[in-house]
Length: 331
Image 1 (cartoon, rainbow, N blue to C red):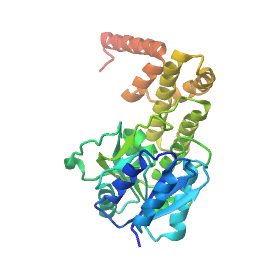
Image 2 (tube, one colour):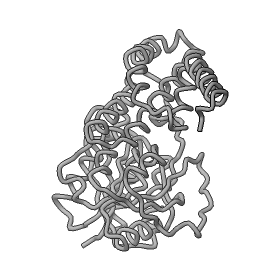
Image 3 (cartoon, helix red, strand yellow):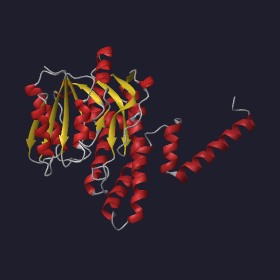
Image 4 (tube, one colour):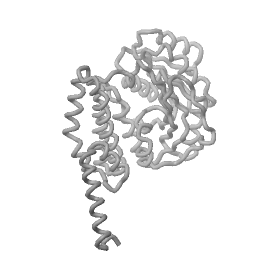
C-alpha cells in the first residue's frame, strides 16, 4: 500500500547503481515502492537489482530485453498501473541520486497545494553532492507557462518531479528515440495550469561521460531538434504565446551554438552539420518572424543569430529616435 512509486530504468550503470538506489532507501519518507527496470543490462546490474529486492520488500525488479530507456520507463509505468495502489510516480536515472528529503518535500508540496505536478530544481554534478540551502525548501506556486519560460531545461526533463499517477493514464514515452523526455514532459506539464516548484536542488544529475548527453553528436541526436520543433508547433496551436517564443529562442540559440562548436571538426561531423544547416535555412527566418522585437530576450537572441541584420536594425532605430527628438515628435 505504497504512496509513491519510484521508477529507475537501468542500463550499464553498475558503477553508479548502489549510490542511486541507496539514496532512495535513505529517504526520510519511507512509504514508497521502488521499481527497478533492468533494460537488458549486460553488466552486473541485473544481479545488483535482485540482491536489493531480496533485502527489501518495497523493491520490485523487472528484467527485459534491451529496448531503450523509453521502453524501460514505460514498463515501470505499466507495472504501477497494473499492480500498485500508489497515487504518485517519480523517476530517477540509474547514474543519478537524490537528496534524502526529496520525496518528503515534493509530497508535502503536492498535499499543501493539491496539484498534480510538483517539481524541485536539479543540479548537474561531477559526482559530489551540492550543499542544500534549507531556506529555499518552501515550495512556490507557479503558472505552468511562467515556469516553462524561466526554467526551460528543468521543465523538459522527467526527473526531479512528483507526478500524480493519472498524469500517465493516456501517455507514454516514445520508443526508439533518444532525448525521449523532450517529446513528452512538457505535454504532461501543460495539461495543468499550475505546478509547485522547490527552487533548491534535491535531484543530482550526474554528468556521465558515457551517457547520452556526454556522447559525441550523431544524426541520432538530431531527435533533440525534432522535439523542439514539436514543442514550437504545440505551443502555437494551443495559444501558449510566452512558451512558444521561449522554445523558439532555445531552438535558434541551440542550433547556432551547435554549428559553431561542431564546425571545429568539420570532417568528423560533416553529416550532422549538413543537417543543422538545412534546418537553419528551413526554419530560422520563419521562427524569427514570430519573436517580439520589443522583448529584450527576443532581441538578444535575434542579435546572436542575425548579428549583421540586427546591427542595421538597431542603427536605423537609433536614427529614427534622433529624428523624432530633433523634430519634437518624441513626446
